[in-house]
Structures are given as structure tokens and as C-alpha cells.
Length: 526
Image 1 (spheres, helix red, strand yellow):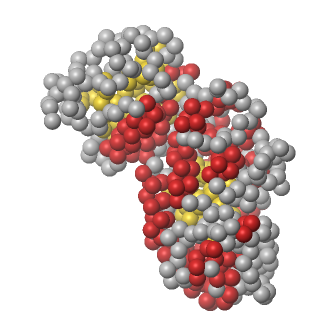
Image 2: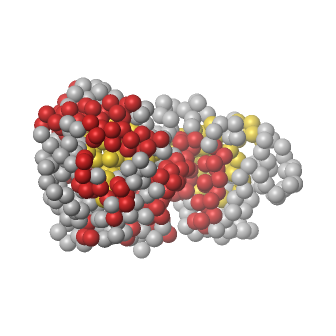
Image 3: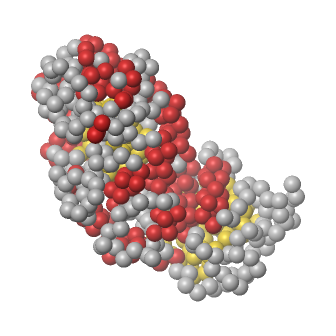
């Protein structure tokens, strides 16, 4: 490999002794390069424009910190996305050409204004982009911003070669909430590994960091448990409407976990219980607690099933299930469900939640559950997910638990946009795109302080959807707005501004072949 003429240079005061660079080019003032006017989602915390531009072209190279874990991988991820978007191949930490003129440097730095591990700073000049981040996760969030700043078409006709102009300036950014998630129900209808990966890809672009998988319900059991094989042999064969169902082998689940981890997202597994358990009890009738003869279920009613909360076999079973899933799930959380257990006696329900919480802790995880679990004496480390009963969430917060906000009337992705929506339900509300965006997570329940809020999650239940196109119709564009609710501060959010930025997401959504709902509230870019 050729060595590069200049062995070191100074970029924004940092000596890059391991990289190649030529003398800085004279800055050129390009027209229409206002960084503050870019359609970034989520909206960054602070943006300062300097009205010049960085010219991304074949004379650009990416360099990264190579002593901190994950930074080189972030550089490679960015290079891959640049290649996919504009068909420009950018080398990472190497160059075969003496004529490098511009660099993108992804740097590890503890000297950031924010304490968040996902914070980052971008300094964009005419000859360099410096991305500072404390962690590889922060760097990964930063390269999503870089991706969004790269125009679809080269736009400098004066250059000798195609050049994509990125407006210059400084971005100082950090998330408002440390947990920003989406849930996908793969139990009512099964979604393939590739369908889940595509969904994760789009969410990562908008800086989500959590993906909650609702793996079990009355209609299907979707993850292999080697010590209880009938769960998938029997329970995995059904879904709503009588389709073929399906399940993930443990190797497939590990593949999804690794795929998400490359995008600095955790996958939170959920085994819903003691209700929503018909598929498990039909597979192993000894678990059943409703006293009725069991059959497979492909309908959409809820609340009719329960485990036997007084049977030792049930807890031995759950110990095996939680142990096997925890062993392949690096997330600190294990979701135990706990919602809509209408046929479980109250005392049995409380006993069950408290006992299962201890099993989860035994296997090194924090329990998470829907707000009903707060009726029990839960540990302060357990997270309560608010979906419909603020009083339970308030009780949990008073006990020291963190609250994950998923209010059905605001954040449920399976709710119809309006009465004409092709998919979805409306038992909680119709949720058009503006309603989804125009609320404040930290003010939603006045009795719950921001300090008690873990973050926001938008659940997508799958009774009415069975493939990626239908999933995307309900999820997008609302999930883009929820990304901003989780990342950006209230003071930085404004519907009129947001809908203009949302309209400009069309090229990305088109490139990703996303079947989004073209809400008439948005003047979509043609």
C-alpha cells in the first residue's frame, strides 16, 4: 500500500499522527449550505451553521480511533451506507491514493458537554468532519446524522469529479431519554428474520436503541426452548387467521441480537404471562390454570388464558424458559408481560408476579412488565411499562421503579390513523400523525417525574398485519415522530417544523422500499 505524502496534520486542534492528509484547502463559501436548515430527525440539541460545505468525493477517507472498542466498526458501517446511498466507495483507516484531500475522523473523546453515553459532537469544515463521542454507541448515533446530511445527488458542478456537499458547522447532540424503543408483536403474526432486520435498520437510522420482541401469546410461541420442544413444535404452528405461524431457532434469535448490536440496539425479549399463554398451555397442558379443555387459538380475543400460579411445575418451566432466553440475550431486561390476566385470581396473580420476578433476577436480568405488575410488591429495579393505567405506574414510580411510557392513546402503532386506514384497530383511539407527535412524554403523567421515566416505547401489535408492507404502513411515519419524542427535548420540538422535515424523508423511505402511510397532513416531497 502506498504511503501518503503528509504523515500528520491538525484537525480542530487534534493531531492525527496515524492518518494521511494534504494541506487544508482554502475554504469556499457555497450557497444554500445552512446546516440549521437540514431536515434532521431527530432534531439535534444544538446546531450552529458556518455557511460553507464539506465536499464528499473520491478524495475523501474515513479514519477512526483504533484503540477504543467499536469505533472502527462504526467507520466501516458509515462507509457501507455511503456506498449504498451514493455509490461512492470510501476507504476506512487506509488509503491507496496519494491525493486524499478530505477526511472524516471518528474520535473517542470524554470531553463532551453531555454526560450521556450516546452524546456526540460534529465539527464540519470544508476539508474535514470531526465526530467526537464518548462511546461507540455515541459515534453510531453521530454517523446517522452524517448519513442524513449527505444529499441524494452530487451538487457541485464546479468540481472535477462528483461531489456531495455537506453544510458546515457544529452539532452538539444527546438524547433526552436513555431508552427509545419500538415493540413488535411476532406472536399474533410471525415475522421472518429478514423482515425484522429491515425494521431494525430503519429504526436505527432514526437513533432508536431498543427493540422489544413480544415473543409469546395465545396465538403462538415464537422462540425455541430446547428443554421444552413442544412449545415450537405445537405452539409455533399457529397464528391469527389460521396461517402457518413460525418461530425463531435460538441461533436465529442470536443472529437478530447480533444484528441489532451492530446498530447499538438491544433486543428485549418478552414472554407474556400469566395470561396470554394459550399457546404454551396447549403445547403442555400441565401448565394450564383456567380449568378448560384447550385447543389452538387463531382469534383475537384476550384475557381467557392463564398459567396455574399455584403449581410448582409452572415455575420449573419458567425457570428453564427464562434461563435459556437469558443465556442468548445480552439485554439487561427480561419482559414478563403481566397484562390482561383477567381469569387469574388476584392473589394468584400477585404471587405469580413476585415469584417470576425473582426467577428473572436469579438469571441476572431486571424484570420489566406491563403496568398491571405494579399491583404486586415489585422490586425497585423492575421496570413498569405504562400502557393504560396511570395509577399503577404512579405506584411503581413511588416504589422506586423506572417507568417506560407506551400510552395506548398516544403511542400504539397498531391504532388506525383514521376510519379509512387499511390496517390497525381503534379501541384506544385513532392516532393521526400529528396526534402521535404532539405530546410530551415527560409531562404525560404529572405525578411521574422525568427522573422516574426510563424512556418511551411505541408498541406495534400484529392482529391485523402479517408482512413487512402492512407493518410499515402502521409504523411509518409515526415511528419517526416517536424517535424524535424520545431523543429531542420538548423545547426543541415543534409540529410545524417537524412536518417539513418529515416530508423530506421520502428519498430515504423510497430507497429503503418502505410502504409508509402517505398522511394527507404532510406535504410529501415529490
